[in-house]
Length: 263
Image 1: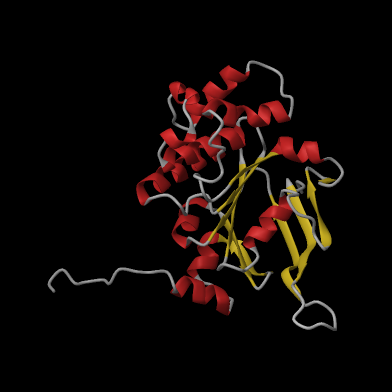
Image 2: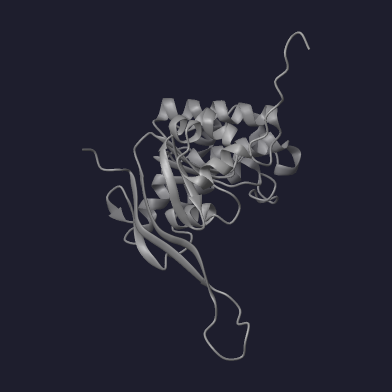
């Protein structure tokens, strides 16, 4: 059996809250509780749940942007704490807000080339940036522009280009499409599918959008109260949810009323 690309075991994250009283221990918020997760090479996995369910906390721990209180994460069979550079070289991240995730002082070329410089990747960086901009559907002359000169969809394409320019094996998107309009979201979904198919890029998509998840992810994990309460193939989990919380999530998705043609 092939080992997973990414493996988390017993992952927990506690946060100490401000004291409510002068005496006694500070209260603790259990943001993540004993989470086990495997991500296979080349798969698209969605992590869904309401705000506060632990989705974003999990994403930060998987990328070593925060330290777990308990448990650990392995990437390519090695603990992520053992070799941070290996993790950075093998992963990319796209965040929710394309307006806030790009430095307004950097040109698009400098923004996209940042991982190449940070990881000291050899080669012609201008050519690599031009190639990845073309792959995400942006014209080469965009490289000389600044973020404020682009639309929201174009900025998110830049963020995606920056996330894949160094050739990672895993992309983690934390609500990467929620700030975009419907037309742009459809285009980015198609682009993610193409990158998954052509590059074998594994994707972990953190989202509360069940419609997006149904169109993109083969497997889904449902989080509630910091725990994974249900997981499995997307069609099975969303089509016939077994956990009460998943049933509530599915029932909350807006649906247009069905009218008879004769009405």
